[in-house]
Amino acid sequence: MSFIRKSLLQLIFSGSFMKRWNDKLRPVEFWEVDKQAHKMMIAWLLYYQNNQDMSVEESQKLGREIIEGGIFEYLYRLIITDIKPPIFYRIKSNPMHYRQLTEWVLEQLEPRVQPLGEDFWRRLRDYFLTDSERTLGQRILSASHLYASQWEFSLIETINPWDEELDDIRYNFEASLKEHSDIHGVTELIGDAHNELTRFVRQCGQLRFQKRWSQTPRIPETSVLGHLFIVACYAYFFSLTAGACPVQCRNNFFAGLFHDLPELLTRDIISPVKRSVQKIGTLIKEYEDKELSSRVFALLERGGYTTVAARLAYFLGTDVGSEFVGTVRLGGEVKEVSRDLLQEEYNLDEFDPKDGELLKVCDSLAAFIEAYTAMRNGINTDQLQQAVWRIRNDYSQTVLAPSLHVGSLLADFD
Image 1 (cartoon, rainbow, N blue to C red):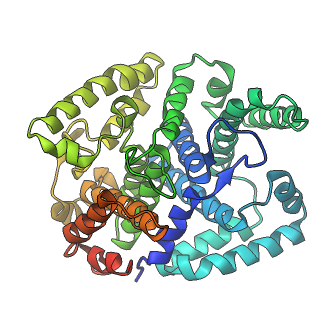
Image 2: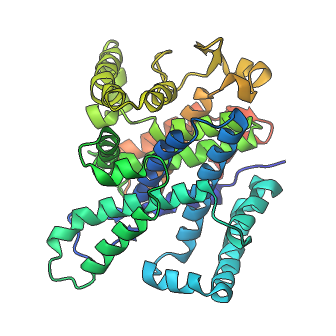
Image 3: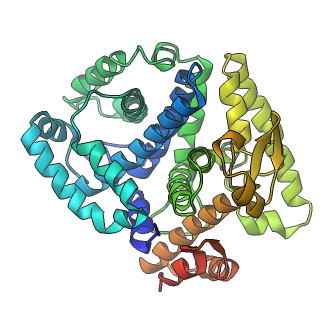
């Protein structure tokens, strides 16, 4: 039986403290969790560009490899923290040194990750310790990592004109991305700044500039982009623990990764405002749907990325009115289902299930940890106290699986 501990949730959140490019002059702070979110959004786009001719089983396998590989690489990065990339790549080029470093990293991760189950722990170990030819999933992750890092680099390049490392950094990004140009979608990303795929990736990246709880001081401040990755990771861990089928695990992760995409268009409107007047929430939702259709879905469809637009719409729940509604696909149509029915009858790959209620719990849990951490760091406002109290109260009796009692998990945060 697998279960989730407080320490794992806090480890995932700790990327909100981890600075990037901290030896360069920066227009804004860059955080590791934001970069990981952008990387996985790009990986999702490349995934759907490369799975069109695959069987359902092959596509599902590739999806899991990309999701878990992305999580594994993030966990590894959290442990090695401030080792600069050039030094890390030198270590990696020496098999003995890399294995020694990796064994140490795995020792640090084991007590926090192994409760998710022996199978998950084995896959994590094998990912780093098994010598084999790089797979398509690993190469998609590599290309996504390079592109997301290059996007950050483009923001700091012009304000560091005296930095003698810039030419080498720029050349390495360009050369390394070209090595991945055989992957469908990479050529479009690096070849045309006005390509619809590139424009969508830029839209996603902008979410790193949008701060959550914008009128409440917090340490650390978190962006909408970083929040999306945290929710996606929590959703994946919860899905594994709840016994979700492989496709549901995949869908829950990607739905978590994009669930706040409409905030690119509306900004982060806090829940009390949405609930303050009966019709405000409905009005905001109508505006979000209209803007999504014209600025996101239409953009992708104009570029011929209709499959990508359709999957994004499914994750965002446009057919059922909310991303937090459980859905399945029956006879080619999207249907709303209760969580009990989803788990009892439709927890099979063939139904393309997505657990909206689980996603809502993970979204609230991420908000809880944001508020809880800020309070532990000495920021004690009424808003933060009320958020912690409300979320504890709302989920005190919520049970998603026999080993997944949300109230008990929250109680560990004393």
